[in-house]
Length: 325
Image (tube, rainbow, N blue to C red):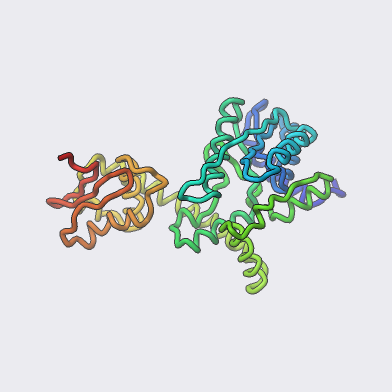
């Protein structure tokens, strides 16, 4: 193994560590785009899955956003068997842009297609090719939006059946692997389009590394890991606090007994449990709810997502649909 590239060894080790949680003969799917990151991931997964007695396949999602997207997907699917992947499928999706933007709509369609394929094929895990740079970009975008702790904690290594084995791997390493193993890859032109916030964040990180010195990307990724541990603990405490509150209405002193970082999470849980769409509940909503406790001046009911109302009356907070009539 002395002649093997350190990048190859690092990526194979990262994938192997992830696959150790599987049982023999389990099926693992790689979300394969044809780019260098997912191609290097697919290469390592094919090798490591075979060594561990697992099955490895690939799902290529064709978003239909580029004129040649179908050809790119077909090319990736034709190369996948040579990496030891079987089954290999192409999932064509329709991306319907909403108020959240094209990137968010494409991501939603992609994950829906991956979940459907995993359900149908009986896959244990879905592997994603996000790297350390992707994590740093995520944190930087969160900072730019003024997001809370959960957003700044970046992408999780594991969520449900999704795994991100390469979060500690540099993006350049995936290209080194592809070059060392003679694996062709495709560069998505959308990754160079400054119309997308993530592309602008990528360019900003290059500038920061130049102006502040190397290590910014690693520091942001490391910060995400540290903050995720804090966010996980706060979420556990918020789950417990919400469970103990029970059904409303809730006495003001009950809610004020919890510190503010916990209350904001409790508010979010209470709103979602009452029917507010999770993706529409923001800090603006939870802060407004909390002002009913801390800045009460007789203000009327708050209008929340899901056509909910939050109001304070007789020393309690009431949450629910608007009163009929």
